[in-house]
Amino acid sequence: HTDNAVREYPDVMSINVCSFVILVLILVFSAILLTMCSRRMIRSICAPIDLLVEEAKKVAGGQYDTPDVTIFNDDEMGYLSQVFNNMKAQVSANFKNMERILELQELLKSTELKALQSQINPHFLYNTLDSVVWMTENGRTEDAVVMLTSLARFFRISLSRGSSVIPIADELEHARHYLTIQK
Image 1 (tube, rainbow, N blue to C red):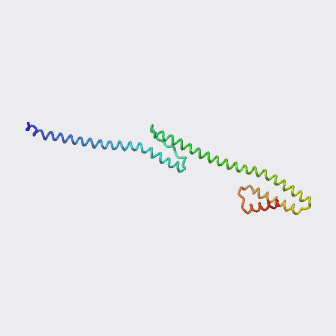
Image 2 (cartoon, helix red, strand yellow):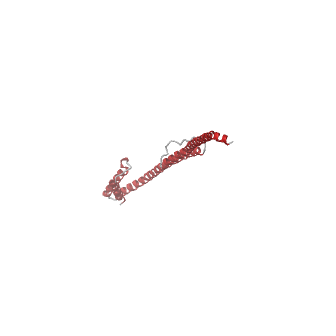
């Protein structure tokens, strides 16, 4: 029996070595395959997250006109990208609405100011002309001339040749004429 075992030993050992080599090759191949699959899976999870993070940084920086994030996964990441795109569109619309509201408020202030000016100017003109009439009737023609001259220059500056910006020197002259009329 021992003789047979001694004779078969090299054959059994060669089969064991072959089996061991095959087992090692299978393990190496499995490890490589597992690594490749793991990397692919991690990339499929991390890439959409990285994309959303980059787009969120752009939106946080005020860039609302960037293209929508397109993640076609039918999972949480796909849903999250849709919600992000909707949020970005809503924030952009809100900012545009706020800009429009600010423009309208500025226009309203300007319109209110012009309406008040148009109400004040006729009363001021009527009162000044009444004062000129009173001065003329009482023989104060020189005072009436000074007042009418100041009134003419006052309104010339008020109209400011259609410009909304008036130099400070003109503003000071405007105030002097107004004070002359009031005096």
